[in-house]
Amino acid sequence: MSPVRFLEVPLPPFISPVCIVIGIDVGISTTKIVGLKDGKVISPIRITAADPVTSLYGAFGKYLHDNDIDLKDVEQVMLTGVGAAYIDGNIYGLPTTHTDEFVADGLGARFESGLQKAIVVSMGTGTSFVQCDCHGIRHIGGIGIGGGTLQGLSRVMLNTSNIKQVASMAMQGDISHVNLLIGDITNHPLPGLPMNATASLFSRAQYDAPKEDIALGIIVMVLQSIGSASVLSALNTDIKDFVLIGNLTLLPQCKEVFPMMEKLYKVHYHIPKYSEFCTAIGAALSYKTSI
Image 1 (cartoon, rainbow, N blue to C red):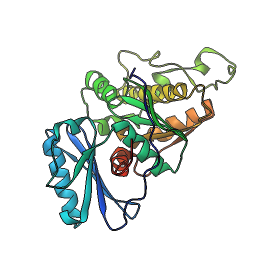
Image 2 (image 1 turned 90 degrees about the vertical axis):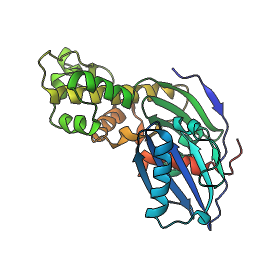
Image 3 (image 1 turned 45 degrees about the vertical axis):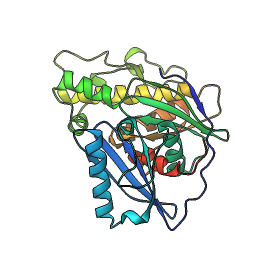
């Protein structure tokens, strides 16, 4: 589990309506970029390349071209993400600053969801939890389960690491063929546990199970593990809202798994419009924010 970090971050001041602030979330091979102007998000895009430097410059150039933005229109570039460490100096001569990824997660999720008090669940290669409330933004931990887990298990069990392909296969799967449900072990609902709640992940999987069932089992295992861990992260608080961000929010299975967990745990999971780009949005928002 990640160490607990306390980062007290107030709301950022309004960015000047006449300028554009660029927020860039740099991964190892994928870069996400957004612009903020007049308090609005401008055309977020994602670019994949062989390395973070190529990915960043490719994304930046395409973003300026596609949105007809001149360099002189950009006041500031804000970088975040694990790949940002590979970037030194200014981008295209523009003022460029690095910002903490957890701060960016919190600011972006808070901006997109409209919630001031929530736990941000950043579902990347692994998953981190960031608490937002009146005291600011605090990284409170994480788990090593996320998109990397989904890709790795799919590679071993399904001979593919293409998440879109796995999600498509899972649409045809039957979770009751893979997971043991409460209804499989008792004729009566247990206190607080409906009959369709999961008793044990993958307990019913057979060596010759169809790939569609395995694909669904892997996705459900990852999403349920993240959902359960997020609820545990809120213990000893009165927080009932969780903002889901990151690439895994694009999985169609999120629309089935998280509503079921809402009923089970009496909480609310929110997936903002630009959930995939929240960290880049938060990076832009962190401009002029005092940490």
